[in-house]
Amino acid sequence: MSMKNMRVAVLSSTALRHRYFHSVIAENFDLRLALVQAKGNYYQKQREESELVRQHFSDISAAESVEFMSRLNSSLVPPREVTDINASALVAEILEEGVEIIFLFGTVLLKEGWLNAFSNRIINLHLGLSPFYRGSATLFWPFVQDELECVGTTVHLAVAEVDAGPILKRIKPDFQVGDTYYTITNRLIRQSIDTLPDIASRYLAGELVPMPQAATGERAWRKADFSEESLRRALDNIGSGLTEERIACIKRSRKCRCSQ
Image (cartoon, rainbow, N blue to C red; front, side, top):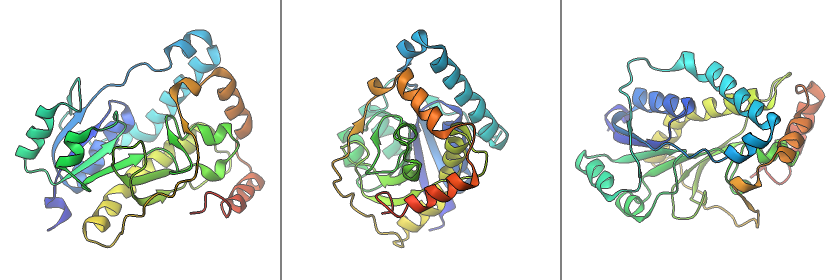
């Protein structure tokens, strides 16, 4: 079967990057339904207490707009917003549509209903390099820890545990001179979304064998861990922009713990 004829659904959230995700999936598969659930304002307290945090989220939005807005498919049918992505009625509706594969990006943790109905057929894009960085804001924490060699995303099969499913592909950024936190992360997200159809197609054709995640003992980061102090450390570690020397150093470091 042609991938263009493969019936799929998307479960995601409402940010601009998620809309771009819908566009790319729709261009490569037969997208039957796109269901989105808005996220809560997890960092409201930190924003209220810190001008630096407020500016950070403003800069994220600006960089996201630059990376994704002009690339959106203007003819894309708007996704449907739901209050509970885990509602059993939604699982039943998607099954009735004959959907074969679910693409997942940026939702709450899926429950048994989805996992049982689509075992090994839910492909998740995780914004973090698993198993080294799991949990919340996992593109952010490598900057805090000064481990830019561990910046990356992971395409994996969804399971009940957070970001723990068998891995199809890890994607790392192509660092460029002058890069900042905002350019690195948004370009990496776009590159990951762009490569997802090929990764999924190879998996469905049996050309990619899912790789179980090794237990590393790494912590899973929580939303409550984010603070002005951690943000300041992240921005200080990246500085005003990457230099050739810093990029060479990062590439050498990739041969260490995040080289799996």
